[in-house]
Length: 319
Image (tube, rainbow, N blue to C red; front, side, top):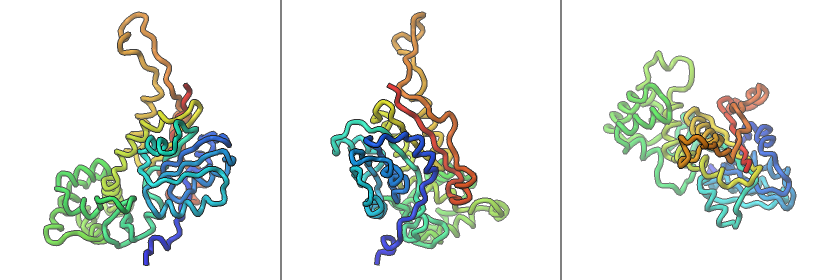
């Protein structure tokens, strides 16, 4: 029995009202949810679309696509649910014969379903085989990273992607342990991390394995590479007046989005004319809708603690 498919794909959409308000949805428009998940955000988009409106939902998780298809059945807009990396939107649109969209959303990171489904190996709270693949057909797994990456690479990943000050010790302890026996489960990895992190550092605060699990998950799914590509390319595919909304949950992700949006919304001087008295700045094609990231309200934090670290940034194409 596939327990994963028997679980209901429940996912409370984070910053739902803020996303819908900032997408500025036109009933007959074309909108992309690049991280479809359980269709929490997409169902709210579809509620506001007419029969001539279009939703394009993208996910690399088969369970998410199946659950979303069922959840979106009641809505009468046109719907295209596609298995793909969200960073490949350009190719998805080409296949659908669509040139531009009126808005797009990315909700970066792992879904509640993936965390809560022990078999997927995302959570340090459940013992399961090390996996962490969002796309179950992908080759690289957390097992491969933990057991076959060298110590220097493990340290780099945990330090950069997990921002864990104990990265060096954790990498050292992982390599030492796997020489005795390969690390096969999330529970075994948690035990190694607990041994590596000093007891004084484990008192209070986050679970000691949280940052390492985050780092390995990001590596397995190339999440930062996907985000960098998408933050640059999604903007090119917007119609004038179209908006791009990106929700991130970690500082490293937010920096990528912040820097990309800054580049897109700053006036630029033609390189040929730079330094000349008559040089003029070209007005940017985009404007920031949000000067500072939007965060969850007190009411949402009480209802959905996982929204605590969520940050929403929005830009709009103006020409």
